[in-house]
Length: 371
Image (cartoon, rainbow, N blue to C red):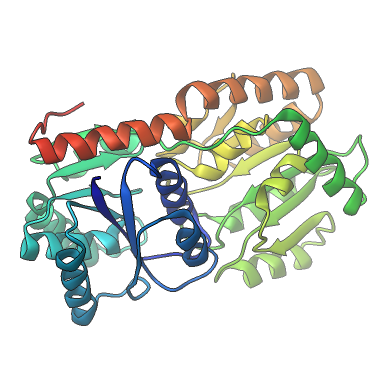
């Protein structure tokens, strides 16, 4: 059986670790998977339960020579056939280990994050990626817009690639309805109240301050900001200062799908994405999406069909779209159903896993053409 070492520099809450969990869960029985990741919750334990292989501990978002040596030893002892790195930090480990062991590497960037760097750091990062790109045998992009962004920056042009859209699971409608009823009852939410939800880290890329400004502009709606991070306290303080009473901050939760199921509209204010799993999960649960018109969100949301894309920073436009949905139940439900159908047909985890397995086999067989 094919032996693959999946590498990620984060195992905490987030779309990247969740993507990897879904991938390895659906490769079970077809590939023997080992995972290299930090000893973080919740995904260290979830990976442990999902795989028949072994876990290897590496630092969180930090490069250490001893971790490289540990991975090299693991690859040789376990006779690993293929490496697959997920994200920027994991890509550094994957490239070094691939170079020193001769085991081919597949790399998935999971978004191209440059906007929060200064000019000098941007140049250093781009120079590194261009110099090191050939150390990977293959690149998997999670969305068409991510590939276009890479082309604009001149990244990974000499490496064969394939666009494999992120995928999520489908859930039985009866189960989703039960989640919705239980959660709304627990939070004393009436049937006639509209809840807008987001599931996100509170950090610069996710742009949660903009979400608070949208909430301030959109009166008459309830907001659930699910997640945590460095920007949570400033955003909470901003809401308190502006007298927003219908905003709830439950923090990180073990069952986020129940919160999405209980809501009516999903909102994303991200500055950029790869292909956002939380948006796809909202679509799988039948929720229309209002999202910033940025890389990743553009691939998930069909404007005017499954939701609306607003111009990043245009608070009034985002508010108008939310009110349009909240005041028209027929439109809200129609867009939710259209989103569910789109997710089922184009963003299925089964499709994602099958296409990724094809890449693994092609790399090992030397069939390195683009798709």
